[in-house]
Structure formats: C-alpha cells, structure tokens
Length: 106
Image 1 (cartoon, rainbow, N blue to C red):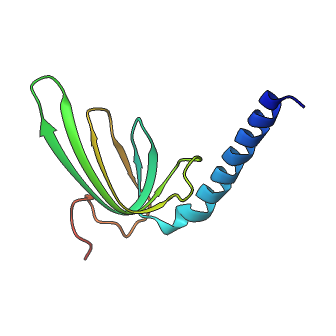
Image 2: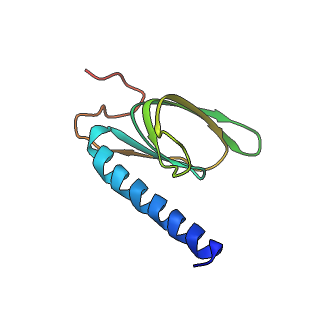
Image 3: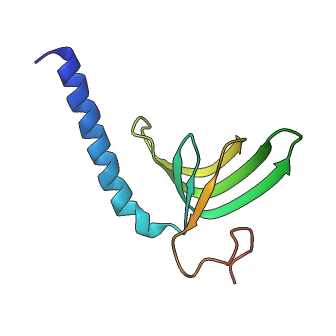
C-alpha cells in the first residue's frame, strides 16, 4: 500500500468518525450555525449585523459549541466568536428555542 493510499484511508476514517460524532451530539444542541468556513452546533447564539458601504459584516458569538473539524483534537469549545462578510445560516434545532436567537430563553 502506498503512502498516498494510507493517507486517503486515514482521512476517510477521520471523516467517518466525525460523522458519527455529529450524529451523537446533534440532539444536545439548540442551534446549527453554518458559515463558509465551518459548521457549528451551539446552545447560545448572538448575532450582530454591521452594515458597511460595500458589504455586510457579521459578528457572531456562540457558547457551548461543537465545531465540525476533523483535524481538531477536541471539537467542544466553550466560546466562539466569528467575524465574517460571508453568508451565515442559522437553523433552530429545538422547538423550545426563542423565536429569535437574540432573545433570552423564558
């Protein structure tokens, strides 16, 4: 087996483990935040939109976060802040979430 084959097999194994972990942790989170850079699962989410002259600018803060990244030794992160000019998609995963992510839970 060549080194290239070994690397491809290792990468495929990491991807499979990541997909299994995602399926396991998915029910534990309230929001799924999709950016061009990554996919995040979190339980607390705040978004600030700052209009600029030529592009939108978003500041996103998440707490209690799981990030889709097969190369990280741990995917659970206490707090994440993102600054981006790209599209951001937020999915509410649980019905008990507030109507908007910026409202506190009742």
